[in-house]
Length: 124
Image 1 (spheres, one colour):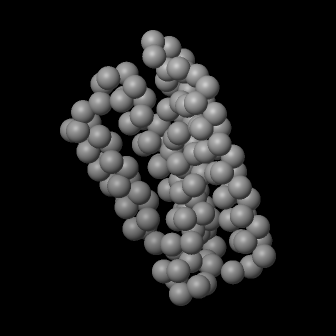
Image 2 (image 1 turned 180 degrees about the vertical axis):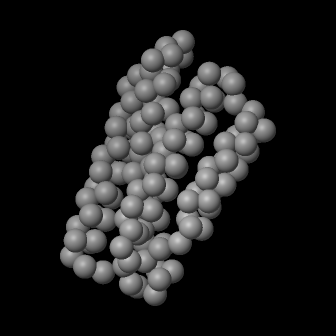
């Protein structure tokens, strides 16, 4: 692990803490009852917080899987996986706040994301 990798990972963790603090402020200060804008803002903020949290964790998982060797493209794959996490979480939270959530829809979204990620990762 190089200093650049440590710096990026620490910066992303600090950004994730900031995002979670923003979620905490939104949840404690604003009532989402009957306010669609607040509900969708909360869904986007929770998705962003989960996605930013997932990026360094995905990179560290790949780093550990490669026996502590950082390969080129690991941060790109980690960022892509963090983006998938952010989109899925934001979509599921938005569906839940709009009372349109159902288990078949959630399973379909998760399976499609796994399918796309596997198809993008197998090409190597």
